[in-house]
Length: 395
Image (cartoon, rainbow, N blue to C red; front, side, top):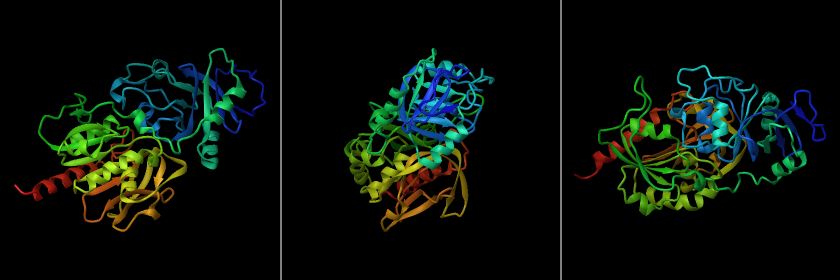
């Protein structure tokens, strides 16, 4: 249900949740999960699976997610699918109220999980109309409220939405990164035992946590890497002290230019050592900034598991998982930095590499959680680059 700002609250089905846009547009619905109010940027995600992974993806910090697929909640939740310890998305907007789960892996209902994790949900919303508004007008600033009694101060909600400062100029990596370093040895899920542990010695990789997802770290481990995770604020001295065979730059939220104020100097120092570097999502943008390129805020970003990307090097098209509201300006790539991938939706940059060096990155999420597995080869490419460097080093 939607309404203009002056619409009375006495709607027939007694709404218990309200989504207020900064322009005064209101969407009423049925609340679930936590109660209270939250402010954020509103985006939409077109994935048909993986709502739990999406909600726990740190790249969604500062955002509320509108799910275009209506069947949200029907498979419940399980701790195995958490990408981080807690959700980072501020809330969710869905077409239909979540149903009781019907899946053998489910350990809890989505509504109870959201309530326990302090995240608000609103159901019964015309998500098609809302998605069209986001596409046409750009990602709006919103306030979401859930009150079982249906008591809303509409003017205050709209004011909260208007007061939200937005993501431009905002460094969120510091808020979602780990507080101290740790090692990672868990590999990708495999039937029937779940997540196996890596026991063999592999390439020493330092992963910079700008908001890393667990499945990305699992892919690194499965590709033959001994992973040490460092906070986003790690200096080049701290990174190089581990004598890494390669450095990985993770995904994350916020404005890359803001995070780049402290991350770019570190990356530049690492690049000077000719160590293989692989970045994804925010890590891709961080690498681009360190190489001299620029980033821009997108109108409504890319969020989904069905985004076609063309690889210029091979001519192949990959179906990818994406989650980003900023992009690298391909026109700003300096000489010697080549565009390798491009979105077939809008032509935006989706990958780069440094000519003649084992340094590359992509905008999308090749670990595909959720999403297709077309791009796992990138982790293997990273491992191959480290192996070739090891062979070239003097004995």
